[in-house]
Image 1 (spheres, rainbow, N blue to C red):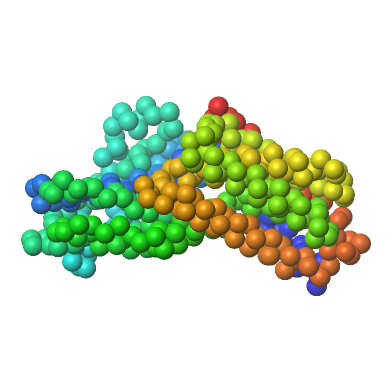
Image 2: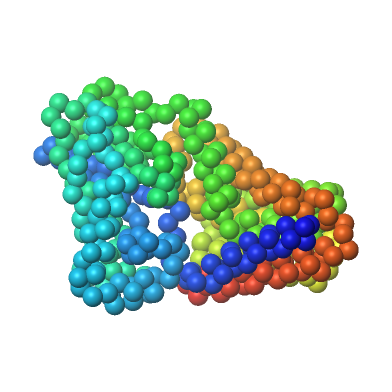
Length: 378
């Protein structure tokens, strides 16, 4: 029974591995949905929602190889392709809401990049492009507007542009969250300090669980080597201090490093930790220092994601702290899950040959494949 539960954990890691060998590193790395809602002077509204439309049309992950998506869509008979396009339009109609005074307003859905040179000559191939445009009429005498996208989409980075009153606001919405009503008259009230802090805290958590596969596997790799608490604490502390340092420095503009370099190195760090787990069963003197160095890289990866989401003009440092706190909670959740799985039998004689080595092999292979995929975009 004990071995069965442990082997189920290995099976879970294997599923991650199998899902990782299919996507290519050139897949559009959209970790959030950039959305612009424009209130136009002709009393119409226009929503430009950025997403990998090819993947969405086919109902597959946005990490799927873009060339494969293009090949699949272009191979469809015209009737089937038109049916797929219409199904995609209905998906937006069902899962996106634009509410005026609390009432959902109908809109038409178009894909302006489809059939343009912007898609056919793009460095990353695409058929439908990355923009879904929703257009509708603003009801007469409306006082507020709200935006909602279902959990089928990632977190929303929303910009509301009011051309009628020459105003613009930005906000970040968690998955499945409804925006704060934007009032046409009077001054828009920015979300309070606690509300913003909560948003960025949960964004930090989500960046680890469930979205941060590479970070999850790195933390699991740290856990697998350490049969005792003290070595694990040493490694996790080194990792935490390092990524908090570079996350802060990068977001505040003191350090800059291209994601094209950072992301392959993060994948390589996952592979290295797992390979060392296979080679030795002891905490080497240099391991905490190596983990610290890898933590610096992971912090730059966190910073790239946070920079893409954007930081509010006010309370930047406080929001940064909350985002980092969310990351730490996500890491602790991963460690807690691993401890709940292995806590009763990590000292068993079969733990290393049956669990540590097979799991580390899966993690190492996954990290190597990710590194190659990500480096191929250099």
